[in-house]
Length: 256
Length: 256
Image (cartoon, rainbow over all chains, first blue to last red; front, side, top):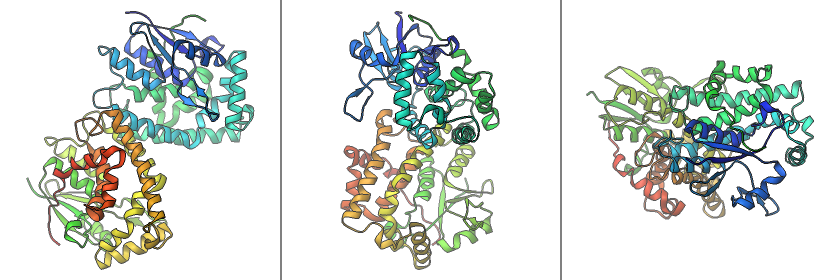
């Protein structure tokens, strides 16, 4: 089997080189399926040029009408296909490699779409995790990406990044918001009998949540009190949940 | 097998005697499973006394701290069990009658919980269908229920029922809101390959949506231009969807 290529945005410290939540979904998917791949690291200001060059479709349109390009993007030399957007990549992988463990077990594709809507509605309420990590993301990026990230995020959040979730009362408030959000999702898992949304079988819905939590774990807080605080939510449910993903967290390096 | 009892709120015209969306979920479930049951009709002001008498738990607490009792309630003489709330009833039926078709196919219970959250978030946005039907519900109730319904709904909607969705621009606006809401859900079905959320297999998630649409169909609009307008949403998807439920729409009468 030829080697797939996952395009990702590099962090500057070795232990948090892979940090982006959306590309983590794809990394979990590739590792879970046991597919051979390598990572190509792309700085933020270079994403659009790369996508145009290899023929990756834009995933959104900006307010000014121009195309917006994002990672993850996957290139498959076997079929000479380029795919943008993590859910489309997951669909592609299930379809193209049907002998690997399914990301969408039979009969669950529609449920996954509604799960994504439910998950999106929960996070949209406070966007607490983004607020808790955004400054650390910026500080962990290489210079060109860091400048780009700060400029675009300070605009969308209408705040200096240093003022979004400073230590103390404000940060505690966002932790409480995150706890409320996670409690809603823990409720779905409790009803389903856990540890995964389908019970014992891992699926892409679980990777959506893990891809977001690993943001906090890898980038910022591993072994810190902040990460332990999240792990302790819902009587420790999320800490145990993330332990089950450790076997799918290898970062397969490629060119730098 | 002994006969289950479904408690429901009667409408006054014969063709819309069963009209309540939450009890319709349970009726679809009972008919789909092929279980023997009869319907007992209870007027709104009598629901609390009935529930206290037979030991049905309240489903909510009112603003003043008092218990709030709702239908559906199911009584099963086989196990001498009384169950409140349509989702709890569905869980009970799957557990107690495992040889009947499952409402929650294996591995989907957690997905059903997230589906309910996604579905709730969609409807909470406009609550358009409620607004379109609320006056007709009131006019279709017997006198004691009608008085109770008008008083409580005019309070919660902060409007005379006649002013919620009058013919013309206002009503058209709610139809557009409903169309937007249904389009979001049609998107989930499209991704899943339809006609049901799991594909070819009917499950309780589908009954949640059908139980809400049948509200419009049975009570108000069957063969009317309004019902046809809803059926035509999403290139006719919902009309075809509801046709598949016709075989589960028998209303098994009981005492009046």
